[in-house]
Image 1 (cartoon, rainbow, N blue to C red):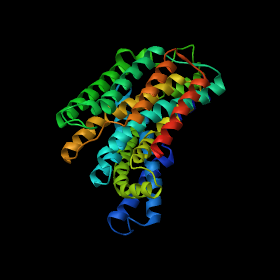
Image 2 (tube, helix red, strand yellow; image 1 turned 60 degrees about the vertical axis):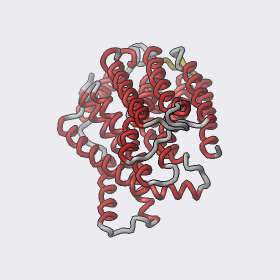
Image 3 (cartoon, rainbow, N blue to C red; image 1 turned 180 degrees about the horizontal axis):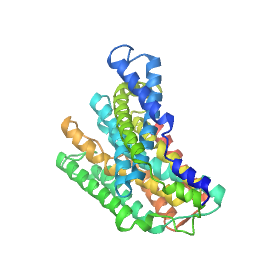
Image 4 (tube, helix red, strand yellow; image 1 turned 135 degrees about the vertical axis):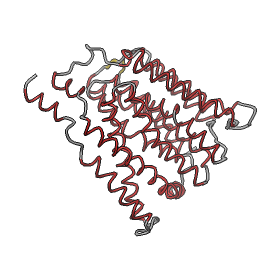
Length: 378
């Protein structure tokens, strides 16, 4: 490795990108002005800035969590990243649940279902299209992908389908005891998956050496760890970013409901918006990996996000629903059940060979388009 490559590696983590600390700083200033009643919280311009800062703070939080994940190593890095993303998702869900707005009892269901559909159809489909166009055919580890899909399918069925068929509480809801038990086993299954992915069978989730050849400088840059000073700064900025997301979500939740009503969309569409906000950073990262012919990393990011979305969010909102004494609607409609079963079936075929082409990506994007249509026009 030449001296320039070494210098690039040493300085790769030397500076924190300006936007990752400017975004939470501006969000904090706006929140301070709001809480001090310097600016009206319902003014249109204030809401626009709040929405912009919310999106920027989400990206900032995910960036800092990824830096800390690289510093901590596995399995703690993956756990931290999943928890950070879940905090954002739960904050957005709970802010709406606490508002008592129409459909607040089903926003968790709508968000989790939307997350599964966005990941398995939108993100995976996009990755296969962009990767297939550039690299023709891409490969990944079959053992890792099938394991992740099995966990995701189990969690989705327990959280979204089974509640429609229980008898203790009729309808799309679990009884409090059932909800807590399903939340507990979902959390345990997520924990087992993280252990298998990062410790027990870590090789199943890594690119084979022959599948992705990197230059020495790129490989060194990829594995370079941030310094202790930068890691400490990222930890503080992560906490600030998450706090900004939580408070901004609470500020924007009434406006989001009104915007959905003005657009003539059903209240269930709120879940699509929340899931899109939460998954956008991970989705962009997955697409970039596919362009670099690192489809294994794309699948890890996509399926890992969906598994965490259910395995961590359902237990959290189950506890919140008990605290708020609010019934939690989890069962999805017959139309959505059809889309979910179709998605899991097609995903099994897509991820069942270890090789992908643009055709499979096109199929997933078609299902995703139908999902958006049914969400907007039930």
